[in-house]
Length: 68
Image (cartoon, rainbow, N blue to C red):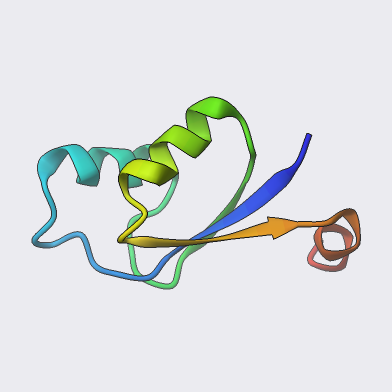
């Protein structure tokens, strides 16, 4: 399964409550925090809802191994 790195780039202070909950569910909470998730339909749907708050990078196997 493809892995993606999700980085929060904007604060959630003025965001809608639903967006705040999505950010927390993704394991984020502060700007410049990153998490790695499998690119499942559920995760991609959550990322689509908060795309204005996050940056997404697709990880290749070489990139993922280098950051361990």
